[in-house]
Image (cartoon, rainbow, N blue to C red):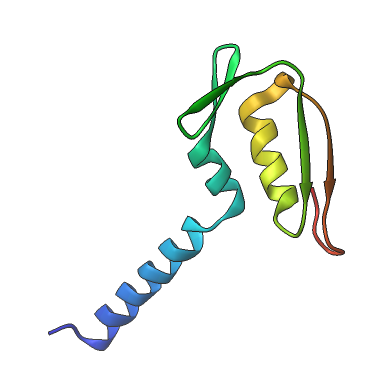
Length: 88
């Protein structure tokens, strides 16, 4: 049987894992990759010529940052619109 302190620790770990799993930037990193001169999204690949990033919503800033970190100079332009109080 688990004591109160052990139960509290287990619940904290579960909640932290749940929050981390839905982090917008981490979600992008799980499905987007640079594969040579191509962009891989899930199991599909596309030419990485002049990628344009478009996003809107509260999570779009974090997601756009993740895309830029992964694709680097392949990102040629973009437009990201977020709610007041959120940053790109």
